[in-house]
Image 1 (cartoon, rainbow, N blue to C red):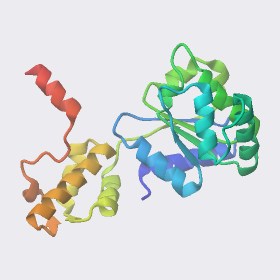
Image 2: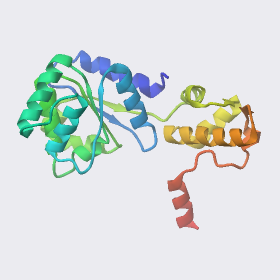
Image 3: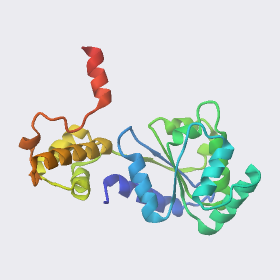
Image 4: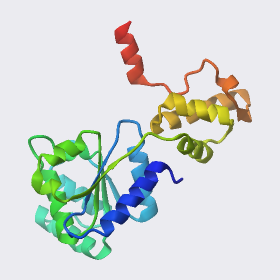
Length: 239
């Protein structure tokens, strides 16, 4: 499913692969909540042999190294340095790209030790590292010049186009959807993948319950296709 954002990732990968400075191997991927960053980058990793890792707030540098090593099928025995050496030796040969989702957990305005560990691995091996975070993540990285200087590209993921939603509905929906309904999903979702997938799931439930073989706008009139909890909270506070 080649969405606009998928093509942006491929373009960034090609650019970094042709980089001049070996150590400039970091790519920052940013986007608003619900746009589908995790689903997109995890699928991209699977299709391209990259290593997808979901970062955790509670990680220490040692825990980060153990997670990378485990995903590479390596032993986590010994000191942190031992684990890091195994990782660098492996990546120097395989040149697999690392993708860290929820990268906002890797640094804040006071500490970037985990990002520094990742930078060290990238510097030594020359492997590409993609850091997937929210909108303000590049500003946090920019605070640390020795890391920011390694950033080869910043990719701003976009809201889904109508063509993207059409592709997603065709690939994901188990029931036929009319063009008019797909357009409504696009409008109601505001181009966010999470809402599109929720809409498809809701429609499938209604279709099964009512034995619909094709679903049109009239079938779902008055039904919330894309329930937005944050929107509900806003409406409740203003009431």
